[in-house]
Image 1 (cartoon, rainbow, N blue to C red):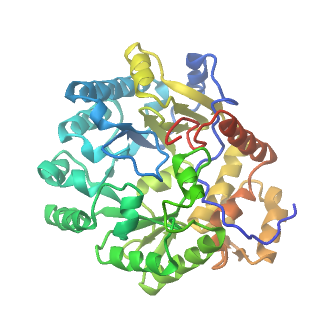
Image 2 (image 1 turned 135 degrees about the vertical axis):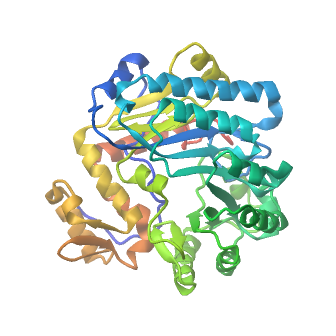
Image 3 (image 1 turned 180 degrees about the horizontal axis):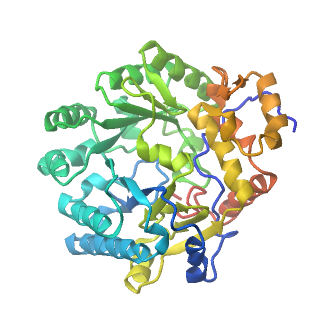
Length: 452
């Protein structure tokens, strides 16, 4: 395999193998789901339950996750959505596969879960506890934003129902850029929310930043890191902006008359280096490629399960599941989701049974996220020998007797390194899926019409 020096930075790889609604269409969903039962249901394995809550007050221009305007739904309609969530959970609980699976973490993502009244989330938490083994569940996480968390004493009320961890999207402290990106929360609300989180006794909260935003300078991203450091989150996740074709954000950037400047590959490379150096100067541990912490040496439990071969049951529209090599994604439409679930039908859009070779390869694709891997964990390491040697020669990897490491230079190229370990078939599938999304005028992320 020929690998040339990297020039343009690729985003981190977060899903492997690829799910494509065109290539992985399921003509018989019940028959497909029987593959779950063919797995070893007696084995004790970790499980994360992810609940997708797609409601938002306002759509940030950069976000490609499936969401709907909460203003379209009254109180009864929102409650009906959570009734469907609970029904979908019950449907999966009947599978023998889950008998000995230990739920280690529950995550509410979105969308903006903090828009939802606590009693509805409590209903879901109780349904999970009633139907799955949660005796070893150590983390219940909820994503949210400051403006909704500050409403109606919600922070304390979420703590009362068992939410143990909050994940807050900050993105940037540049107020001008926040307005341009249609971000609802103000900087003042972020500071006020942080005070309330600490007052409520939350020890574990994380915050997100983004960089290479349109018109953003390298000095601004360093300032953002220094400002978020003052808020003392346990973890800081930081991502480079993804600009998907067919989206309004791409059109707005291309027109050149809305933002103060355009993101560039050159700036992305320079900013990534500045990000790494700034966190290092502030005394942070880089616990994953995109995650930093002053207090921890390892990433959050639910993140580790997701990327380290654990199982994820995804509930709600657009949610993805990964169950011992049976991977699938739900439909990205609330109306269709509700119709299917309330009729007792599983709301899948596409799915695959992952071959053993790809299961093993997934370990190599995701290892750059962890910045190192123990060689003894790599099955058939000789398959990757030429790729590993090429990356070492280029200075992106290091090795000793027991480990492979991402080098300091390699930390700037995590996504590029990961794609070097893709199988030929997966590379072709990624390209085909991308081309199909372009052809159908879809956002490639979920192959839907989000922000198109």
